[in-house]
Image (cartoon, rainbow, N blue to C red; front, side):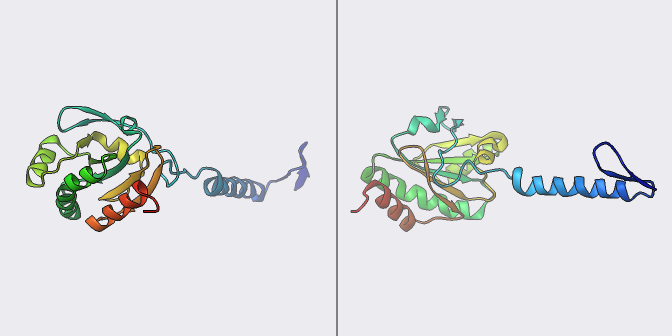
Length: 186
């Protein structure tokens, strides 16, 4: 038995109307999920880098916005990551040379959610001259949508993200990138 209600929707006593309604609701939810609720990554190339404030291993507080006017290499890492050990050795070796050649450059090493004692032990084994920041709870890593380690971001003097590098980098990459952004055309 069928009839129309005031809205012109068919009702059915045999369950087809209810099944149709559930199908319509399900389809709407899928459509919203595919088109309307996709989260945009604020830490994508060309976007302003999300600002943050983190404690450093040296006891100082660091804000990304304090480095505006400099090219910043943001390096997310953890002690348990084998490639991070290699990358730290490379970064530690080339950092003094890069700072001398490019005074408007800085590396910020962001440790992702590890106990301070682990970070201290790691840095003793892999000494570097750049600031080591402690991202307790991985809040900054989440803001940057870090999905694996190491992950590196190159942030321009204006605070916009220039490059996102998933995985390990080497000295040649650092030299080429800095030359490209700090001495364009040269």
